[in-house]
Figure 1 (cartoon, rainbow, N blue to C red):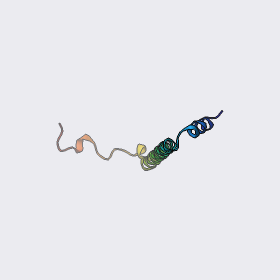
Figure 2 (cartoon, helix red, strand yellow; figure 1 turned 90 degrees about the vertical axis):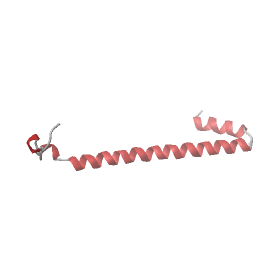
Figure 3 (cartoon, rainbow, N blue to C red; figure 1 turned 60 degrees about the horizontal axis):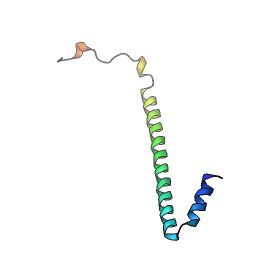
Figure 4 (spheres, rainbow, N blue to C red; figure 1 turned 135 degrees about the horizontal axis):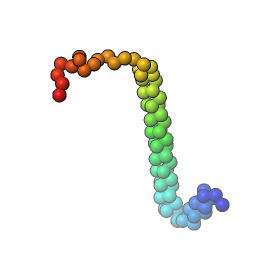
Length: 73
């Protein structure tokens, strides 16, 4: 028996006020899962964006050297 079917059987046995609490909790979990998925997607986009922005920079020479420093510590 699938998990969803088992949950449904248990929920049907609960009084309606507790079924309402189960519904609230399920809605919370769904919202949390969607938020986490969006955060992962956003992280992927940020990584891709940074990768694209940095593309080719490893071949560039250094713009400054230590000789360009006015003060050293």
